[in-house]
Amino acid sequence: MENRKENIYETDALVSQYCEFQYGDEYLGIENFAKVCAQKAIAYSATTPQKRALDLGCATGRASLELAKVFEYVNGVDYSQAFINVAKDIQKERCISYALNSEGAIKQCKEVCLNALGLNDVGEKVEFFQGDACDLMPLLAEYDLIMATNLIDRLYEPQLFLNTIHKRIHDEGYLVLTSPYTWMEEYTAKEFWIGGYYDSKGDEVRTLEGLKAILNDNFDLVEVEDVPFVIRETPRKYQYTLSQMSVWKRKRR
Amino acid sequence: MENRKENIYETDALVSQYCEFQYGDEYLGIENFAKVCAQKAIAYSATTPQKRALDLGCATGRASLELAKVFEYVNGVDYSQAFINVAKDIQKERCISYALNSEGAIKQCKEVCLNALGLNDVGEKVEFFQGDACDLMPLLAEYDLIMATNLIDRLYEPQLFLNTIHKRIHDEGYLVLTSPYTWMEEYTAKEFWIGGYYDSKGDEVRTLEGLKAILNDNFDLVEVEDVPFVIRETPRKYQYTLSQMSVWKRKRR
Image (cartoon, rainbow over all chains, first blue to last red; front, top):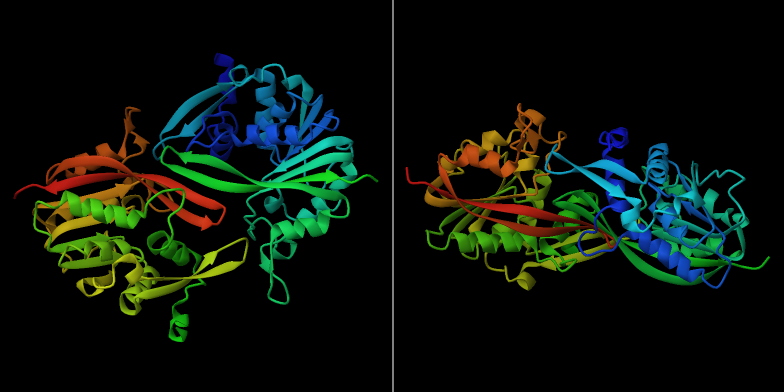
């Protein structure tokens, strides 16, 4: 196990937090979010081909691996190279070690392995890349499913993603979005918010309405449901979030 | 109701968040924390006089008012003048209006009133002051109970509070602390952390052990229990925290 020591990301608290979020224990009785989202996306797209999938904003890659249980080929893409490095390490080493926050500066070492998660044989079907959802590489196309979990309210200009994403999805393929719609000016200038504001008449514009306005030309809205997730900050502090999943089916051209 | 418009603290998101935390709805099935802590402190101190109580770090004052259901006189003290202003307004007007976060920049107006909380007649027994727990006014003394909820890990030098607090409590009176021990250098320089670090031998020092080392000369540790609380950030985002309550009884001089 000595050679795994180089994989301990204890200097990056956020990376460790996401390792636990995507590969670690479940808290407050809430199921693993990446796994649940992948399972839902697989179920929604079950009546269409399930060859190529893209997991946009994949973080440390758990949902990409889950999609690869069914899909023949999966891309996982994240803006953060640090996250992609972890995803690639897990894919290669099949285990990852990280330092979990305990009280104050006290850390607790933890190792998780793909075989314990039923994911030992899927890694070779996945390719991870660093990439920008607002400026995607042309090769990221021809998908049957694109999933983007908790992504749109962290993009600098989500319209750049939403206005063009239909070009990368096959006819009758699926786009699965989740977001708690936590719009913040630190991430997205207010002029680019999809919703969560008052229009010039003073009426509320909700994000789901904003998504419909953008996506309706090329997609049918198939389903909307809430999916909770929990992120552990310390043994005594958790973020509990209710993300809204919206499922969109690509219209025939 | 027109005259209450001046009490809408919609410019200060944290104040609104605390109004909801202390006077608003309960979320994720977790009971109101200020009320629960006050009830526990009242129960622990039931066999001793219940004349004078101090609620240190009282925020918008809910626990101070709850203590005043039983205690004859209560002081609520907070470092934040904005919080104390709200506490005094509620005490005077018996209602408070605030703007709750909805999606993005969308707000939802809310009013809460003391009579609906069973607190209509206790306000006159409470005095609120702005004050610094690390440098308390001399007049804050002669208490039967001092309660400090979620305070110690937000003080710049918690020892200044802990080393001297016994002087303000009657013999056999109670000190009730709660904290999730979320030590952060933004609030407390690491040299002043009570626990949550490794000592020079590399051994873990936990905060409860640090508290015992400081308080043992003047207090007996009576009880330790976990008390959860939930803070609502948006309709879709919550902080779930497990605070540790430690109950200390002042030794006879």
